[in-house]
Length: 106
Image 1 (cartoon, helix red, strand yellow):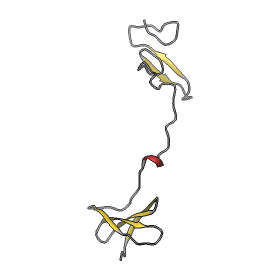
Image 2 (image 1 turned 30 degrees about the vertical axis):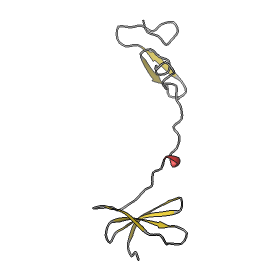
Image 3 (image 1 turned 180 degrees about the vertical axis):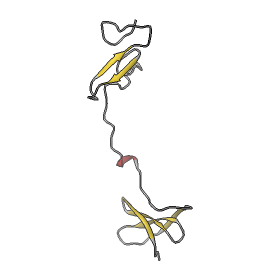
Image 4 (image 1 turned 120 degrees about the vertical axis):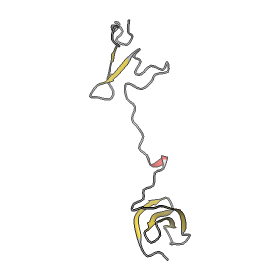
């Protein structure tokens, strides 16, 4: 049925590819080659990739994440990450000084 394919992506039970004859995106059952469906047509497709939430890597937490009070890293003004994503330094905007707690600005 299909003579020229560009790009190939595998996700779950299907192969996804671009038919370069008519620039359509196809979904094909990967186990038996049946159930060929044309999903869309594009003007100039050469490659295909599948993005799905379950396949994305989790973002690791860092020291400047927003705390329950809405403050980044618990800093009242500015949170700066160190070279180690688990450590942070709080800084103040111009005209303020950092309090003895290392987080609040006065």
